[in-house]
Length: 175
Ligand SMILES: [Cu+2]
Image (cartoon, rainbow, N blue to C red; front, top):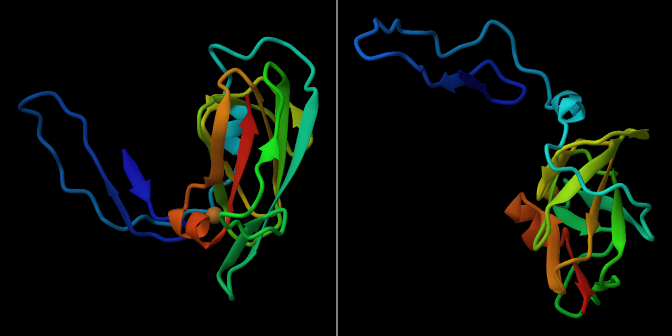
């Protein structure tokens, strides 16, 4: 099993072998550079325990925003700070987060307190994976759904912690 650095030929890997098997030395360099990670595999995933079919009461637009050169990262152009108000949700409701990545970098978006379901990629509805983090590549749209079944004040942020720390962070609240 090889692990390639995105956009590079360098790789590492692990070998699964029965005891006593001969293990050949493999090259640390792949023939071709790996392409940028896209949503091809994500679009093939199917939840084993999908959310119950239900229409979302609230669709929250989430623009992933920021600037690599200035290293400013934000959600809906808001650089989070401790005075940023939470996004209010209602207990018991189905919510969808309609994420659009308007930056030049992939953003792995992580929600605390819930496992959402990937329900739309690039405008196409699907019965996708249950996750707490999904990658949103540059320029792409991913919609996730969850039920407000865990009252509290929950963080939602890019899981590149440098981005989260720089402001790509928001919170949801319901009681
Ligand atoms: Cu990020």
